[in-house]
Image (cartoon, rainbow, N blue to C red; front, side, top):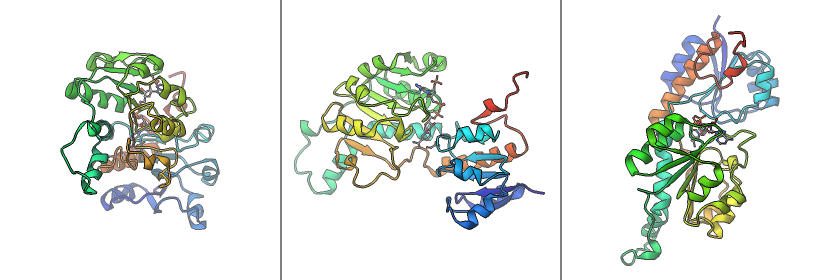
Amino acid sequence: MKPKVLLYKRIPEQALAKLQAQCDVVSFDGIPHSTEFYRELADAQGLIGSSAVINHPLLKKAPKLKAISTISVGTDQFDHDYLASHQIPLMHTPNVLNETTADTIFTLIMCTARRAVELTNMVKQGNWTSSIKEPHFGTDVHGKTLGIIGMGRIGEALAKRAHFGFDMPIQYCNRSRNMKAEHTYNATYLDMGNLLASSDFVCVMTPLTPDTHKLIGANEFAKMKKSAIFINASRGKVIDETALIEALERGEIRAAGLDVFEVEPLPADSPLCQLNNAVLFPHIGSATAETRLKMIECAIDNLINALKGDLSKNCANAHLFINPTD
Ligand SMILES: NC(=O)C1=CN([C@@H]2O[C@H](COP(=O)(O)OP(=O)(O)OC[C@H]3O[C@@H](n4cnc5c(N)ncnc54)[C@H](OP(=O)(O)O)[C@@H]3O)[C@@H](O)[C@H]2O)C=CC1
Ligand SMILES: O=CC(=O)O
């Protein structure tokens, strides 16, 4: 008998057919919290989808669950303690989105430095009345120092662009050294304080964990150069958004480029929406047609493998399943 799988995201027909070939699939568009949804969840062995918060109350209603597969690399939306105590593997989609997400981050770097959105709006609103002078000048990107907090898979893809394409000296901080980044991109390992004080662009790319919650707040913005540009494409809660708004309003830093927010979708009345020096993307790090399809295909393979007991690739909580005597 095929395992029963609950899909909580719309996916292309071809991908759905691949999942249906191996699993008995019940589809929902998101998590509706309806009687019907919970009835189907009660005997589901697999769960696959993205974005929604999968917390303790929801997981308790899925006592037969054998594996979860998220169409994302980030896994902060899951209750990891529950998954650990019930030995449920959580599969995710690392690597397939590295290049696209690094492209998005570089777009934020370019748009903030060259004031692309602000100046586009000026043209569209009919306010381009004479040749552009100093008050509208941007700042160079090439040759400037890039500080990456969280030099992992995506951080490396960003460092590659900055080092080979833009002659940018790279510095980074992690809990442990990344020798590949040091050798390949000539990246310098620094503590956070020194990185903040000496970078022209500070880019945060850590996962959201209890350790990284509000990792960057008022003290960290105060350490940055007045001319620094801050970029966050990791998770909104990795920074203190109120402190960032204050730093931008007071001119403590030059600008910010954000793909992620404390609350998503970002409420239209957020003070960020009033700031010319904030470039705001609606969480589009991996949002290209090609990459989203690759992520869906990867997540389907991950789920099928996990339901067969194969956790050798892309298991985010693999440490739970490694036999210490192996
Ligand atoms: N905006 C978007 O659409 C996207 C956002 N993301 C987000 O980006 C995150 C990173 O993805 P990815 O690069 O694949 O992840 P990786 O795990 O490859 O890299 C994360 C890096 O963060 C470092 N890190 C972790 N904790 C800390 C800490 N407390 N202090 C300093 N550094 C730390 C890790 O190094 P070490 O362990 O040595 O500390 C690691 O190098 C995802 O978890 C997700 O939240 C991902 C894709 C798209
Ligand atoms: O935010 C996107 C992800 O894949 O994580």
